[in-house]
Every structure is written in C-alpha cells, then in structure tokens.
Length: 288
Picture (cartoon, rainbow, N blue to C red):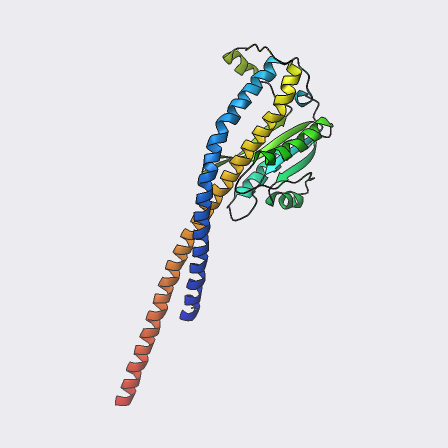
C-alpha cells in the first residue's frame, strides 16, 4: 500500500492537472462561442450560394468551362481539414479515418492529400499517403484569404490536368457534442440530380454578360465560399471537441482525487490504529 506521503503527492499532481484542464475547458468554451457565431453567419450564405450554383450549372449545361469539365477520373486530390493542435479527443482520429476510407474507396486512382492544419501532414505521412501542398489552420479568426489559398491550389491542379476530381473532407459542426465528418466534392461542379430537378422544376436563366464570363467570375467565388464554410465549421468543431475532452478530463481528475482522498483517509486511519495498538501493547508490557 502506498504511503501517506506518496498519496498526498499524487493528490497535488492531480489537482494541478485538474486546474490546467479546467482552464483549457473555459478557454475552449469562450472560443467555441465566437466560432458558433461565425458558423451561424456563414452557413446560410454558403448553402444558398451552393443551391444557386447547382441550378445555374444545370441550366447552363451546354456551357463549357474548365471548372465544370467532367473527365474520366484517374487522379484525385483530397483536401483534409484537421486540427491545428491536440487535446481534442478523437477529433483528429475521426477526420483522418474518414479521409482514409475515401482513399480506400478510390484506391484505383492516383491520389494526393492536401492537409490543412498541423496535425494532418504527420498523420497521412505515417499512413504512406502522397502529400501535396500543406496549409495552416487559424484557430481563432478564419479569413477568406485562408480559403482562397486552398482553392487557388486546387484550381491550379484541376486546370493543369494534374487531377481529375477533388474532394473536401471536414467536420461539420452540429453541436458541441455532435460533430459529423463530411465528404464533399469540390471539382468538377455537379449539376442537381434528375429527381431534384423534376421536383423543383427547371428554371430558365438569362445571362448578362455572356454565360462564360458570368460563370468564370462566379465559380471561383463559389469555391472560396465552400472552403471558407468548411474552415469555419472545422474550427468550431475543434473547439467543441476540445471543450468536451477537457470537461471529461476535469471530471476524471475530480473522481481520481476522491479515490485518492479515500485511500489517504484509510492509510491515516490504519496508521492511527497501529500507533494506538503500539501504545496499548507498551502499557501492557509495563504493567507486566
């Protein structure tokens, strides 16, 4: 059985760890609130723009544009948004597993991974994946310029013919306790499904200026918005996962302190009982 000195030392260590995890939980909760506000502000615009672009792509199906070109897939790029730091539970594990499942489904294609966040490159390098350009993920304020740097590289690869299809893997933020790894095709832009078109009807668009110039200016902006939305969602998901993990760690530390305190009390009680027995034994020896 551990001595009382050892148990007190362990209690002090666990209490220090509990203070750290509690502070990290509060910091993550504050950052999560700001990230949630950004998600709520960006999500309606991104979803509406995606809907408009799907309808425009369907209505302008006869228009040729490099970003709308559907080719026989031989080479694939996967943009994976991971966390920038650790201590966020299974967040990184889940998103890397989703990306690896996507790569396994398309194992007949040549693939390149474009990781976003510091945790991505090492994780995919250990799994033998081919890495392309890497990008940093701002953990506080995500700017549109961060998304534009990613989409610029994806458009370059697609336009030069180095890839034929591009996917985006990120974590969609639903709540702090519910995070959904999501796979989304970036390029080429897909028109709406036939069933969806029949339900919603076919809309006719008149383009001014000409459709080629209109889509040429709108498509890059659409990609920027989609990637920006994914970055915002991923940052909120990272903070939510870290807050949940630190809360769990703080609760576990409290339970460990309770168990160690109980062990300390038992050790103290055993020491007192032993001392009393020694005193009584000594008194009996003196009487004898």
